[in-house]
Length: 248
Ligand code: ATP
Image (cartoon, rainbow, N blue to C red; front, side, top):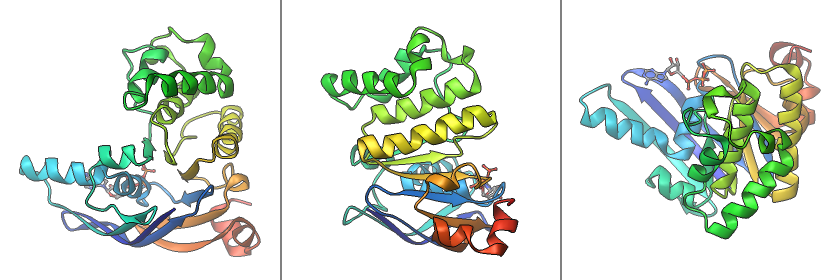
């Protein structure tokens, strides 16, 4: 479904992505694991097209020179030149790191904003689905975003992304800063979303362990480069990988 090759991103002279190639098949969950600053968010921005927006804005403001190179094939089409809104319309939807929900809007308003491109019927159905998979959110419909807990904000951020009717959902560090219990809820729901909606998912995390059981395939990023990749079992059974990346 998505095949990105030779992605390179420079912030001025700093190489943030170094010739990264990653793939995600139809109905797959693909993990991208790496330490702080490995390049995970830069990769997600590049796939969703937001990197290109950041690059243009910096250029117009005379700020840092950002270069973005490589190819992204999505559903048989080259999309590297498409703006993020066009990519979103085609089904590539980013759920950004640190949630970025609209803190002054309530839960339902946040969801409606996410669904502004969807038809009224789609939006209604999707809100019902979101409340089914995240019952906690249904009870908090009128709660202002800024007053939600971290876990509730993450559920809302995923819900808002679902409102945009994704075919490929990009989850950037969804578990960041959450309790093990909340992490388990989110991991389980991520799997359900794939199974029930047939949505493909690329998920980044610093720690592979909580997410590894649900991924089909994973890539490991180090200093902007993809240093390892493999199927879940293949990575799990590699003793070096187990100790270095999974803390097992
Ligand atoms: P984290 O877990 O901290 O979010 P990450 O793996 O998502 O890390 P990125 O945010 O993609 O990493 O950053 C990759 C590298 O690029 C880091 O060294 C970071 O400092 C650098 N970087 C990110 N954004 C910019 C920017 N706008 N200008 C300069 N350098 C940047």
